[in-house]
Image 1 (cartoon, rainbow, N blue to C red):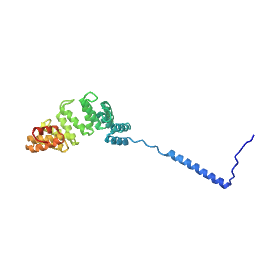
Image 2: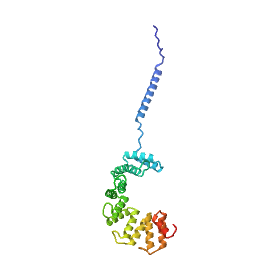
Image 3: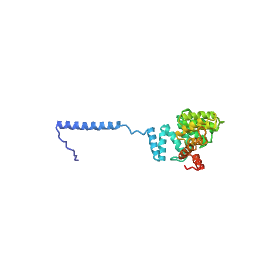
Image 4: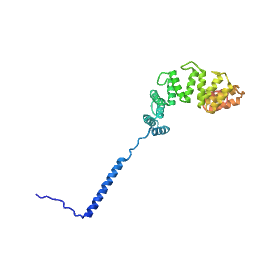
Length: 273
């Protein structure tokens, strides 16, 4: 039986050594490259804050359903602000069906992390009876929690419940206390209501001069109700000299800001807006 074999190639010792060195260099390079590739950091997933930023961008662009998913991803990652905004979107039907139960659930999660606006929103759901039985005492409890953390809306709403006697007897002194706190925190609605309490003499003696001061302060902060009320005081000469022209100036300003009462008053006076 015949066998075959490959004939060996002749090489001198120097050539053999060079070939060995070249092969060693090649193997070393491959090993180094493999180690380098294995040491490369993995691609990082976006942080909850980055997801929140993306969610706001999508929201501003009107892509509400995609924004909702980004808010949820951020919330699942522990971002409290995203939890609060999820509640807002479920409560307003932005990018999803209106679902007050889900809205409440997300507001509660945010509130448990100390988010004061979420506490105010929980109070509003109880106040309006949305997704649960209307409960003014629960509303007051959540408004008060929010107010204690410095939330001006929570302060104002607390004052409004005391003023209107919802969930407890009417208490104008407590209403004034909370309205003043909210006003000091920048709430124009609270400034206006402080003025109303002075004008009506609720919890304080009637003081039209003080009422005018608060109405002007609220009007300067954009309250169309306060603009209208300034007009009323000028028209009737309460706390100021009676001045129909000034009254019309304020009524027109309130009407331009969208105040319905001001529009009606101007119409009844036969004056154009």
